Length: 405
Image (tube, rainbow, N blue to C red; front, side, top):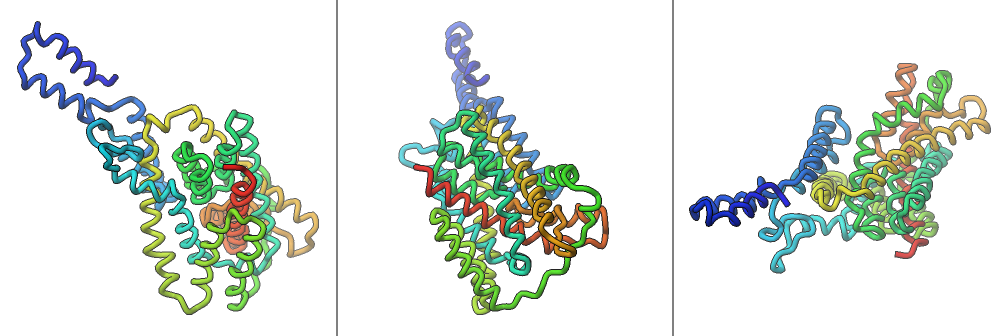
């Protein structure tokens, strides 16, 4: 019971003794129904969390296009109100009238927004680095170990198989894919999963560098890789078509995500649909990012979000991201056992195997140049980075196909 509600009860119970006026009772009633009367401690915690996200986005430049909408959505979703009087929250309905937040949230809960995000990613992604050095695809695959380790950890902590599969996708550091799978398998955990996935994507520059330094030597971090080869236009056009055929047969459950990803890339590379490609990566993508981020934020109302399960998901998310980063790094070192001369890899590029595009590739570039300012690893890192997007979508498709839901 809120402070104002207790005050109203006390005033009403003692009105005869105190001879309170009607205006005083009306004010107490208003106070009880206002935000001042409805606020709870959990709301305060969530509002502070939203403010912190906005601060990190603006001050530290951590995924601002995501964290600003999510952070403000958290604040809006946790502003106190009386749900018996007005429908505002993402689950509220009153007298058949749905709240606007609930209508926005339909794009998340129905799985509509994530494929549209993938369309934009495809339209802005250049797969040349991957086509130039296809073996780097293995690093993107290796980093997906975080997904399956997180799945096992979730089962150990008491989640059922559907919930564990949804939580596991956080290990791929792929927010849209995590939302898509959660909407299908564990909609009641969608808010916590989405916030965890996007939070750790935003914290890539904080989480990854210590792991990269721990698992590599100075000599390995200074290693230069041979320049990427020129990729022809024909190769770029054929890639999304052929890749879609292969991945769709491997993981039919990911056809929606991968279909939109490769369709967007075909729009970019074919050369005759520039207007469509520009719309997919520009206006459409921006609109969907705004609605997705804000909707995810509003879904974190304290009464539903502040639970033991949410805490478990955040802990699992941090561990999974670290494991995914380590998996890519260690597999790069393993590949070097079989490579000779200038074909050897700088192990740092393995950290980009997580699908936080393009932040993890930028972190690899920054980290490599700390030890040798002339060592540019960005283009090399983009190969496992985009491979990680494909890998996490395939992993999601496998889980959607194999786990009953």
